[in-house]
Length: 306
Image (cartoon, rainbow, N blue to C red):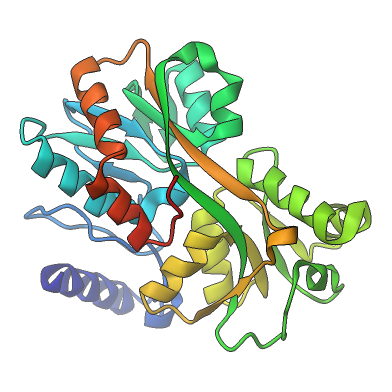
């Protein structure tokens, strides 16, 4: 970690000398986890930064596509898996929105910046609704974690928000996952209806979108925290674990609980692909996901267990 901090500071200093950026402009930028070890570290905040691609993209022995909001678990999860199964030295993981990952599986590739990835996953994890859309893909599925919704706001809760109904305020700036791309968006819409009926949903998702006080994200587990941290949004409905993690790493946010009667719960399902390129590794990882070691990691980061 000490080496990484020095690298970060050196990069920021270089950019400052170039006159392109102020130090405070990127103080909350991801990656928020610890990048893999390498003699060459070249993560440039705001320029070259790929926080949702993890590990060894060259000749991996296991490829896992995770629903993106699990990104905070990946460091410890993969390390624990390698300790339990030391024969796997090279693991690659993606933590993009599950709908995007599903498109990647269907089409066989994805492009991020100038990089094209054609790796096929051995294991795909997502919410139950998403997994149920393509049961023909999997030889095996298993439930391994749960989650619920919360509201993320700036530290001190300056807008004094108390509930989902408060998000209807015309002046309030909301960061909201786009239901077209992110499964959580549809679940949040369900919560809006539970909390305030169709009126609340339409106010936030139609009226406030039109007047640009609701911002629709493409990758909410990165965009929503950053919009809160950089004072671009006042509130963001997120999975509980995302607000929990931002507080865990010391970022200036608050977590507002949503009452059970208005909340929505998620079940995370892992599916082993029928055409997994590494079937033995896929089976081992599926077994690992329901092990006590994996459960302890998910619990540490605020997830509920099955």
